[in-house]
Image (cartoon, rainbow, N blue to C red; front, side, top):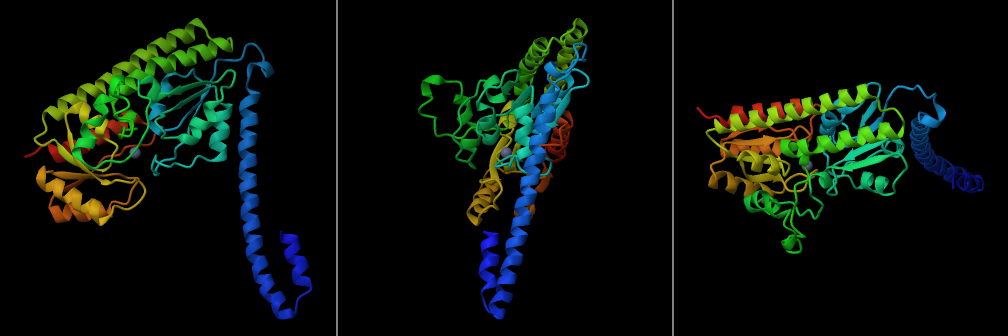
Length: 358
Ligand SMILES: [Zn+2]
């Protein structure tokens, strides 16, 4: 393509040649960008090769226990990391500051998935590229789908901003008899925001790590004991989060909120909060005037005390709405930076500030 442009330019008049030179400059710029992309992909492939090199076949028998683990959503790190043997590697694919919806995994992310011993992802169509990447089993790699572990397997995602859709649909998740009726209904993908679901993940992750080590002949009695203690500590810590949320919410004077996107319905259900409405019905795009009018109506109808914005989205529309409705603005972070316990604490603190009342 580039070569044929040059050949063509050579037989034209000077003026045309100058114009072609300008075109060539753009073509060249594009070619350079393409080459960078190829180079990035090559780096991804190199890291896959590096992953493969640590397999037992190329290492001495006395190699210490270690696992290469990959998680998608940062919060999953808090469950997987304490259970990994020392010297293991854990890669969190989703980078902070970006929405978890429509997240574009890089070739290097997918190479890490291909070369991992353990992959933990959420499912429910939150990370379709990762789901595709793990669809074909690889010998020696264990894949854990959080949704499956939690007993949730359906997708279908029309995004709600009515209390009915936010509060009630997913109560029917486990009811197989009405599966068809609810097939098209919305299901909250943010499983990690419910401590009780996080607790369900601990056992399967430990089991997978233990099996992986056994398959590599790296499972010692000491490591088994360490893992047992880590599992118990993790479950106790998660229980502590649940206890603290229950105790704090009991003291709230107000329990009805508006959130930025529909991420918190599981959390709300767990602790008796009501989400009157959400501002962004489609994550990533700005709310429409129609969305905002609906939210304002819900704020007035349900006497909402605060709107909770999220660090991954521009808060301007929400802030304007809060001024208009003369209510407060707080922050609820659905993602965090990989420390789930800190995330849950920050979110609870933020709710407490706005809902505890005078
Ligand atoms: Zn979300």
